[in-house]
Image 1 (cartoon, rainbow, N blue to C red):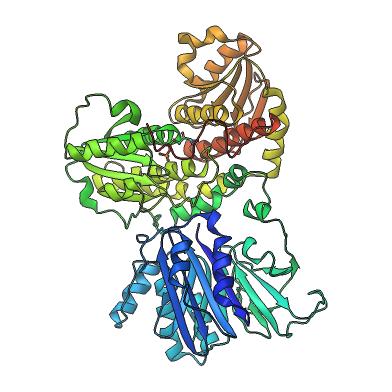
Image 2: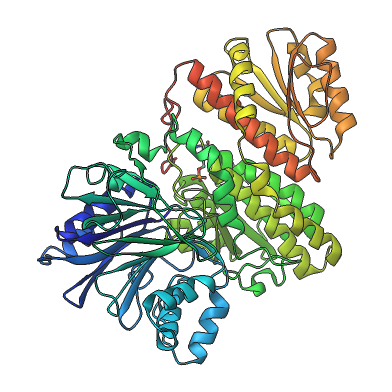
Length: 617
Ligand code: AGP
């Protein structure tokens, strides 16, 4: 997730911006930059990699007095992590930083280039500053130019812009990506007594932590808010252009809690933010009736008759889910490999196979080695990854970024959710290319895809329900997670989550396989988490569960349909399609492992014996 900071005041602007960016490092980034406007002159610095590289570039620079400055840490989604792509982005006399995705950037960019604008970066963000300067030529003043620019953007954004045409001002806009502004005034009155015209320093950030220690009162912008700040005022307009007063609230002073946005663990926070990050994953890729991957050259699929998916752990479960979708929708033979096995087999590889590796980190040793094997064998390669510029991204012929933002919890959640989302999109993208599915069926699937964010929103009621029933699953001689079709990899994933953070034994199993041996374990101390989707093999799955229930296994059924033979029952909402049931059940199994682990007193974010990225064999 990118990070934004801004400062307007008399203090050492450079230091305030750099310190603020350091407080945002936990969000993950691959480049950073600042721009400061002082006495009508800009100073701008950018660096790839860690903030220490930016600090090194700015070591001989200091601000002397009043200045307006903005800063940014970038997690690449459009364009490689390079200095040119790092923010702030320059127009002729303005700089901009931006979080989010400008969905219509390509058409804006095309029109600006047609009018002679030169772009330096590959980013969507750069269109904002050039569009602003284009509007500055026709509008009465900078505010009207900024307002017009914001009205022309589609997508999610948190924006800060500084311009020589209004040197004592910072312009802001917020829609779909968080941002707040804090004030620090010389007097010691509380903000409630303070009117909005006192001379105060202004601090901006995309989350609380950079403001802690500088401000005690902050205003959290709402979607549609835009406006500007000067020393003397904060001027906010709402989405309808009506002026509104800032609403100040007390800023939490606990940095770690702020980094977790108040959640108990990063994993919990990451489960909750899946709705937002999946919206980012979909952004700019879901057309009216088909899928677009600007980052892919369609010729990648020329001459391809098979897809081989290769990964480890949770990424392997996403790959297994994809294998069902590729054969069902893309009508292409799909095979699956566990990387640590594949690399030591003597695999037969043919050049009509597209070799696809899946990795959150892009650094997993086993998966990386299989990618090297495929390239050496002359296969075309694609990586589905969350970290741009990682080893696998640099090595593969093509890459689709999952845009999950940094995942701090060792037990993967949002990375898995965004991988499956990308695969669902990719299965339809290939179906269109190969004409393997009727257009109206593709269109229906595309409309279902848009519903994912709604179906992964965690409700208090669901979380409370799972918190309560988790107390019954703290012992026993093991768990079976069972499901059919794509719910089998989801069962494997649910079992892995539980193992990883509760240290209880759990197995994922195909529902139909239980009678081939495992049912011998059935007794009240054997807990079965049964995934019962309404829209996929419901009756078959239900009879498998009834076989277990008849042998007194303790059953926790997850379904949209009431199931009276379960000891526990978690009801998901009625969905239009089994893939939406998949995402709802994913939330349930993630929360179940979280709450059991918390009850057992484990370190949810850093479970024993595990690493976030297994870069060794
Ligand atoms: C998942 O919860 C684990 N952290 C682990 O299985 C992980 O998915 C696996 O190590 C692969 O990592 P990667 O996606 O970064 O390649």
